[in-house]
Amino acid sequence: MDVSLFDFELPESHIALRPARPRDHARFLIVNPGRNLTDSHVYNLPNHLRAGDVLVLNETRVLPAALTGRRPARAHGGGGDVSLTVNLHKHLSETAWRAFVKPAKRLREGDIIHFSDQLSAHVKDKQAGGDIGLEFNLSGSALSAQIEAIGAPPLPPYIARQRPADEKDVQDYQTIYARVPDFEKDSEKEYGDGSVAAPTAGLHFTDELFRALQSRGVQIERLTLHVGAGTFLPMKSDDTDDHHMHSEWFEISPEIAARLNKAKSEQRRIIAVGTTALRALESAGQSGRLEPCARETDIFITPGYAFKIIDGLMTNFHLPKSTLFMLVSALSGLENMQAAYAHAVKTGYRFYSYGDSSLLWNMSDAGFDGGT
Image 1: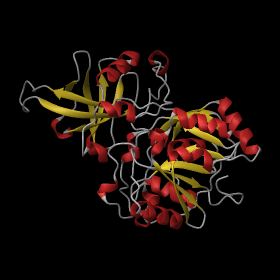
Image 2: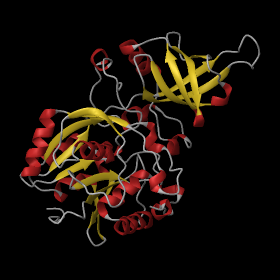
Image 3: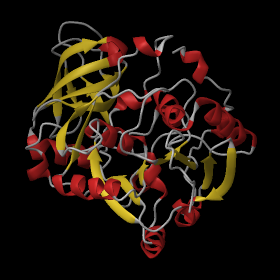
Image 4: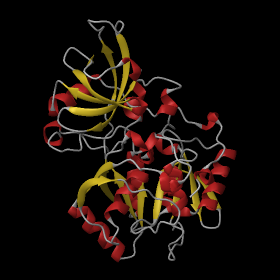
């Protein structure tokens, strides 16, 4: 498909630099069939669901993956010390990460980057776009603990360009239900310890909202998908067929798969909280039933895709011409989403990671009845 079909005008003033406070007071656009739109707030989510509905959350934890480093002056020329910004984006092994580094042009293979008295890394390789391979001097839980100690929240580029991360972001850019890390246990897994971007739909949830959902009779389930920095990469192709989707690691346990399969068999609705939860569910459910698994997925969902598992999606507002806007257009229809986003821009909804949210339904579902 032509990528330009997914373009729209978005004034920069609509990009949220801070979240709503309290979290669940963000605005909430309900997108029903036939371009029927309802303006609400996230705290009203239970009123748009019914008893027996299942919300599926991504409990991944955001790593403080934004680091500041220093490349010392080289002994045989090449200039003096260089300050570097380093954003970790893919955990490769006990000691190795890939990272986006600025200014990458000041690095050579074999250079040493110092992050603290305890932590350093040498440059293994360089790829396009400032993508650098790093081999650290620490491994496993010791490396994870150092990253936790010295790192900062990895704010999305469209926020980081306008302001630096601060203490408020430490809590704001983390869901309240994020899994608490166990460095000794997690370091044994190839996928690493968490995400380098937040599952942003989940940032709106509060303890009060969870209590209201429980009172409503809504079932809550959790899976894990570790969000990669590829979620922020722009489309470089003019046609969706030419786009190579980034991969992300996810896990769905046998117990959760069994409960969700039971809900499907009982014709209860499954609503993914965020595109990351949706990607995990659809990746594991290509047969029409969820298979427990722990692996990577590079699923790329565009209009024409037949959803196998999910009936609805809670998600923030996405970038023009992004893979995520293509995903929501596949779920609710391109014309429907174009109308919804035009309404959101016109009425002042706030976009992206710290922005407002929406509730979308699978318009291809013949049993769709919207809301309660």
